[in-house]
Length: 448
Ligand SMILES: Cc1cc2nc3c(=O)[nH]c(=O)nc-3n(C[C@H](O)[C@H](O)[C@H](O)COP(=O)(O)OP(=O)(O)OC[C@H]3O[C@@H](n4cnc5c(N)ncnc54)[C@H](O)[C@@H]3O)c2cc1C
Image (cartoon, rainbow, N blue to C red; front, side):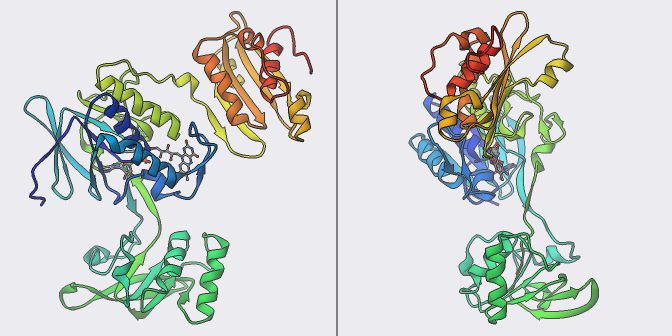
């Protein structure tokens, strides 16, 4: 149990993913102090844990940015407001105490006190997928690790790794130069990891630098006296329990992480299909004083939607008017050509029985697209049949992920298709295709 004094703050944020970090910044601007709790040993949520090297294209101000770099930037942005962090600990229990405050205690016994809680817990705590070995719990932290925090721990030790994905392959390659012996065991002969990593592991096996055992699984574990530490693993090949025993100091089952809402599910909050129910007017849950945002609630699981909710909840807690317009959340698919969408589709409008008009314009009629040999695709704008108000837009084509935002701004202002059609657009630009689609909702496009 932790012996330290309780940590007191204005908002306890559960989850140090992008939403939690952005909430710190917004709350800081409004003079509210925040303390973040995260079960992972580092901040960043899914971005640092699952895809730190993946480029993200929908962050304002960056044409593209690696997920890990975005988290570094969010940390720098939050830093002037001096947020507190409790990392590597899971928020476990909650209690209401005097003066309408909450006491949140972690699995390590650290106590936090605040009048408000913002749950930015995403899909939940990332927990390792464990192999079904009967006595596996006996050796957790006594020779079995599911997450590698400090590779130095394995220096000059005998290590057995299980798994066929990038994590298992990457750590095999890395630990070859650290550990005394590395063995990787995989259930199949095909691997899920990057072909280059698979080849490296095959070559290392061929040269004797590591040992690769395929079509096999670790099914049994043995320890020293009183099971104080793991000493060997029992391996079954081709599903036959004719065990082959291998001496080892550490066994690392690296089968990935899966998110679980975990203890938050027992906090008396209304939950529908793993999503915490909130009133999206103010992000309040059914428990007064507890708010939830981001992937933890319903709606598209997108970082930009989640960050807007972080901004809104910080403003609401500071007594201001925060708001997210869920009718205008853009979605982008970064293919070639790009696909971007906002608002309603024709199918949704038909289903709702709403009379609409559709204005469509092909990039074949757009000068800049033709000059750039990028004329595949079109812009479609959907508008109310009577009022002409824009209800949705769908774009396939060059820079679709950027062009969509002209329509988003128009929708935020409740614009009619005619408003876009009458707006002067520079020539030659891709954005002229948006104007032409808006014109097609009325008297017709000029260049079709
Ligand atoms: C492969 C992949 C690619 C993606 N690419 C994009 C993209 O290009 N653009 C985009 O907009 N979105 C993308 N997303 C979605 C985006 O990552 C999520 O929308 C975003 O991470 C949600 O942020 P969050 O802060 O709500 O949750 P998370 O990032 O999930 O963070 C939640 C944090 O809360 C912690 N936590 C939960 N419960 C507890 C507890 N009880 N105690 C302590 N800690 C707890 C978790 O450990 C976690 O660190 C992608 C997702 C994936 C998986």
